[in-house]
Structures are given as structure tokens and as C-alpha cells.
Image 1 (tube, helix red, strand yellow):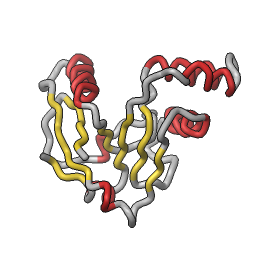
Image 2 (tube, rainbow, N blue to C red):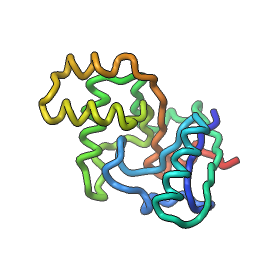
Image 3 (cartoon, rainbow, N blue to C red):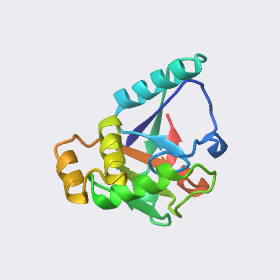
Image 4 (tube, rainbow, N blue to C red):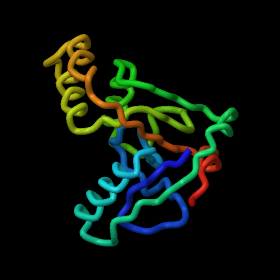
Length: 156
């Protein structure tokens, strides 16, 4: 399966120390199967840092070679997914909040992030949260967060 990573700086080695805390699934290397989303991420990074270029890196993910890895997968927006995202977004440290090698699940874009904040603040109930997000288009993201997980990726 092809996955894409948007960046503003070309690199050949994945460096987990560059990972930012407070992301949806925690610390690690994020990719998406949607090239346009990776391109938008590269544009955002380029605009944010005003350096480099708009770069979309392409990788091949060997999905069949994950039997020795700990993989967490969310196929849709669920309460469990939202709780996992909240756990990781609240973490502002460089200490991973989970033990998974790979996490796969929906991206919490601005609209979904807004609903997550409303749920967290007690403005809406869990049932209302699920109602608010049920028609939202799911776009997946893949987080690789261990050295072992990187062995399943090959840069194209």
C-alpha cells in the first residue's frame, strides 16, 4: 500500500526526535494514503516555517509484515478513537502514552477536533458527539512509532 508524508524539508532518514507532542496518535512518523492530504500538510509546514519547499514523500507500506508488531486500528470515528486522540493530544511530553508500534485510524481534522473539544469540555454528551460526527468523511492516517515499525516502510 502506498502512503504519503508531507513535509517542507527533504530527508532520507526518519528521525523520531523530530516528532511533535500533542498529535492525534502520539509521537512518531505520520503518513496518509491520500496524496492530496499529504500535499496540504506540506503546504502548511512550508507556510508555518517559511523555509524549504513543498515536498510529498512516497512510501510503500508492507501490511503483510506486521505480525510481530503491536498494531492498533480504528476503522471509523468511535468513542474509543476519540478517547485515544484526547489522551495523546493532552500529552505535551516526549513520553509516548501507549505501547503500539503502529496506530491506524481517522484523522481528527478541524471539524472533528472541534467536536472532540466540545465533548471534553462537557458541552455535548458522548451520544451527541457520535451524532455530530457520523456523516463526516473518514480519512485515515498511519502512525509509525517504533524502529520495528519502520522496517515495514520503504521509501519510493
